[in-house]
Length: 116
Image 1 (tube, rainbow, N blue to C red):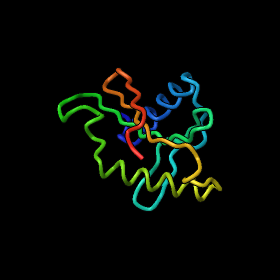
Image 2 (tube, rainbow, N blue to C red; image 1 turned 180 degrees about the horizontal axis):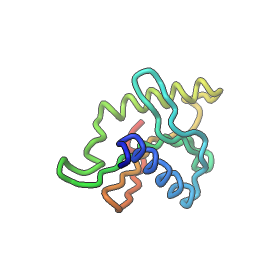
Image 3 (spheres, rainbow, N blue to C red; image 1 turned 60 degrees about the vertical axis):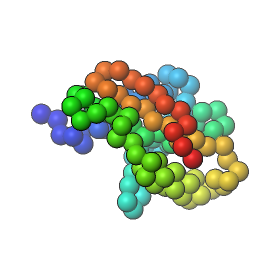
């Protein structure tokens, strides 16, 4: 039986492949920061994109999208800006956005611009 962590890695790989099919380019996966992790860092042409991947196999506790709180979006945005700065990109000058790719059982939904 797969652990939740292994299922998460599988779903992040699935999400990455889906986004690459949509024309995005992978820059980094599973970037860890104190207090959190950025699932996928990608480029959509000139735009830097941070993607939160959420998966739910059952809807007993709500949809995958419902698990992304405003506080999570704020933390994600701050970590993404720190990632860009640490990698020589000026966040105030670079086009960037936060996206979510939610997978409810087998249905994939890419939500662009969840915040910044």
